[in-house]
Image 1 (cartoon, rainbow, N blue to C red):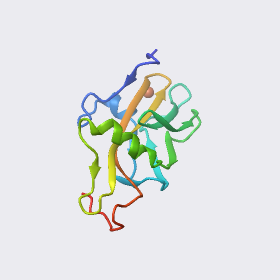
Image 2 (cartoon, helix red, strand yellow):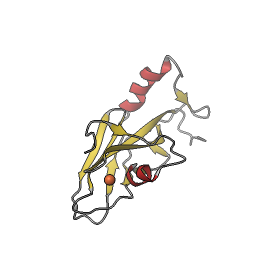
Image 3 (cartoon, rainbow, N blue to C red):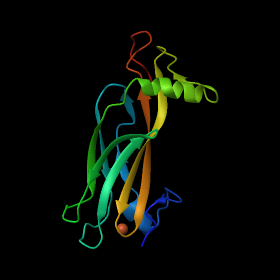
Image 4 (tube, rainbow, N blue to C red):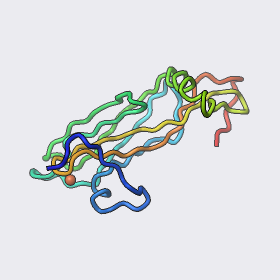
Length: 154
Ligand SMILES: [Fe+2]
């Protein structure tokens, strides 16, 4: 029986083992999102859904903040979860405090709009192989634009 507390991650995301490929959640989300604007995050796990071996749930979080959880059962066709996520403006402020000592805040040179880089974290639970984590880096941009001009983020 797998350890139910340890969260497994891919040792080398560019070269997944077969076990990792079957268990590491794959996150689909926009690369750049605006605070206060809902967007869709789709999490898939390329795993079987059989009575004796299946994915029990998929959770999504960001900066330790839980964004959602989907419970699954062995009778579900495939382990897929869709979340509608809205990131509040406070995330920018919190990250500003967290990051300014080391990296500074990302501020667009064109208009002064702030953004932060953060990670969406998905964790799934396989009833046989335990917990597995996948992540995706996204950029969160403040909806408050400095000069009201469109940004030219790269
Ligand atoms: Fe499994």
